[in-house]
Length: 101
Image 1 (cartoon, one colour):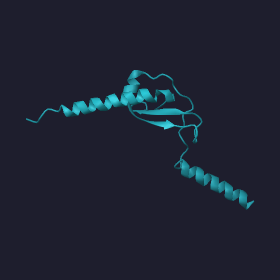
Image 2 (cartoon, one colour):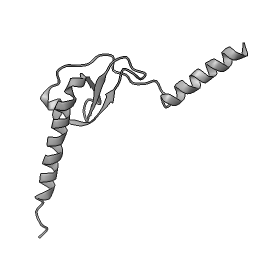
Image 3 (cartoon, one colour):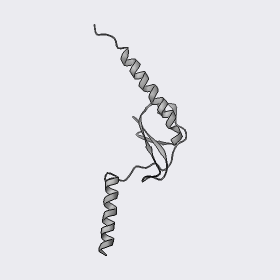
């Protein structure tokens, strides 16, 4: 009996540590298409792997208005290009600042 209790306690301890004390936020479905205006508003993204606690591979994009959107992993290249364009645009705008009078 003690072995069962100890193994159950060990299981929940590992689960608690691996999920930072909260249940994982996994995507259960992915979108294959994303509107261009949403892509332009992407702030960051993270990759969800099916080998971890979640069941499917997905890219989770974070935007200002819609906090989390789950998209197909094939969208990663398109998101990377959009973020690169956004970064280049910000750099160009910051390099053309007008001098103070």
